[in-house]
Structures are given as structure tokens and as C-alpha cells.
Length: 240
Image (tube, rainbow, N blue to C red; front, top):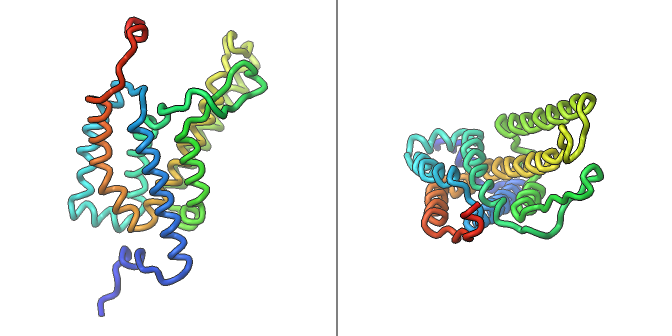
């Protein structure tokens, strides 16, 4: 008999570990689905986001081409990269779906500012924690690379701020404004968790098939939603 292909072995549930991986992968996929749903509810959509959605959706149709899919199916890292790159665009929309008020972070250096956590942040953080057994066991080069990039970016930001504060006054109204640092930290954590969730989805053949094959439809529907059914702009906002 012919030996099973790697992708066939990926779907065979021969042990409790395989079953737990499938459960983790589908929970991670559910998290991505909730993020996509939040993107449909977004109210603040920039024109650049609307412009990028149609070409991205059309480009995602390559996942339906058989020889392209065979290549992706044989390398989960390729699927993780494609899924992460696309979900970064969708997540940018999902972050604007709210809330305006709610649980927020406060920092001693900025007592008057509060940083409200978006709904999407809760989703990706929880999904990353739930799927951690899968992405930790199946961590690939793409996941390690993007986490390393996020770590380097955080280190550079911290080093730059610590260096400049020795030469310039620090404060919300001073030359060196620390206000963007908490927002940067939040973004790094959120997008890092999103990358982990995408890696978990791509680690199993069952879920990466669903995710990549549905991407074109989701992207084009998102474009149609925000292009033709956008929320009306208030007259005051429009005049500004």
C-alpha cells in the first residue's frame, strides 16, 4: 500500500494529542471568525483600507488553484504567513468596532489618559491562550520570526525613549511625549497574539483549508460592506 502523504497524516486522529490539537485549532479558527465579524461592525474605516480589500480578496483566490494549494498544504509555514498577513488587515478594521468606554489601562506616567481595550484584543488574547498547546508544539519558522520582530521593535522603542529622555523634557505637552508608548505596547501584544492564533489555525490541515479557502469571500464581503453600506458621516464631522 502507498504510504500516506504528510497532509494525510496531519488529519489522522491516532492519539489524544491529535484530538486535542484539532480542538485547539478549531477554537483558534473560531477566534479568527469573531475577529472577522467585528471587522464587519467597524464604523471607522479609512479609504486606504477599503482600497486594499478588493485586490487582497482577488489575490486570495490563488488558494483555490490546485497546484498552489498543494504547495501551501505541504508547508504549514506558508499558510501561516498568508493567513497572518491577511488577518493583520482584517484586525485593523476589527479594532475600530469598539468599545468607546469600558475596561481600560492606566499608567502612572500618564494619569489623565486611559487606553480602552477593544473587543478584538480580548478575542485574540483568549484565543492565543486556549490554542497555546498547539502553536507551542507546532511552532514554525514564521511564528518564531514574527515574534522575534515584535520583540526587537519593542526593545528599540524602549531603548530610544530611555535614550532621548536624558536629553529632552518628558511629558504630554513636552518635546518627548510618552503617550504613544502604551498604544504601541498594546498593538504589539495584540498583533503578536493574532500571529499565534493564525499559526495554530495553519498547523492543522482541517482548519487551514477552511481559513484559506474562505478568505477571498470574507475580504470581498468586507469591502462591499464598507464600500456600499458604510455608516453615514455626521455633518459636523464632515465639515471638519
